[in-house]
Image 1: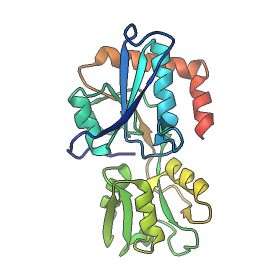
Image 2: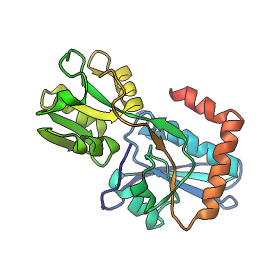
Image 3: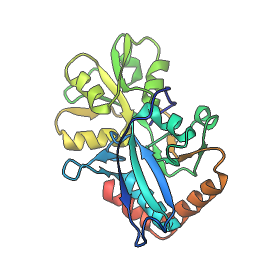
Length: 248
C-alpha cells in the first residue's frame, strides 16, 4: 500500500477495546493503529461504527496470542508513522508496504501479506492495455501509497491526481476526469465486488510484488520479536488462514 509518510498531525477518530477474559487493569494493552479507509484490510462497519477488516482481526489474534488486550485506533494515514514515533500507539497495522525508505524510520515485522499494484479503468475501456497507454493521461492514486510513487515514476503522464481515499480516486476515473487509477490488487477486487459493472483491472503483471508488514518503533525490539513469534504461531495453528479466508 503506502510508500512513505507525509508529515502531519495524528487524527484519532475512535478506538475499541477487545477484552480477552481478564480485566483491563490486569492485562497489558497493545495499541494498534490504522487508517480505516482501506477495505478489506481496515474499514469502519456502518452498523457498529467499529473498525473491522483483515488487519483488525489479525491484530486481535496477535493480542490473544500474546495474552494482551488490544486497543485499535483509527488514524489518518499521514499521521501513522509520526504517531508511532511519538508513542501514541505501539504498532501500525494498515496494509503498509515494507520499503527500504520506511526502514530508516521504523522496524517491520516479518511479512504477513503479499500484494501488487494494478491499473483500474472503467469497465468499458478498451484502449488501456498497460502502462504505456497511460502516456498523456491523468492517473489517480491514494496519496502516499506505492501506487502514488509508481505513478510518479511513469514517464509521460499528463498528471498524477492524488486523493486521501481510494474511493475518491476511483470516482474521479468514473467521472471521466482521469483515465485510470493505480491501486493495490485486493483493494481493487473489493471495490469491483461492491460496485459491479463499474471498473475492471487491466490484465497483466506490470508492477513488482510488495509485502505488507507491521511497523514498530526501532527501540521496541523485544515487542517486535514477540509479534513475529505470534505471527508464526498464527500461521502454524491455522488461525491466520481462517482470517485470510474470511476476507479473501
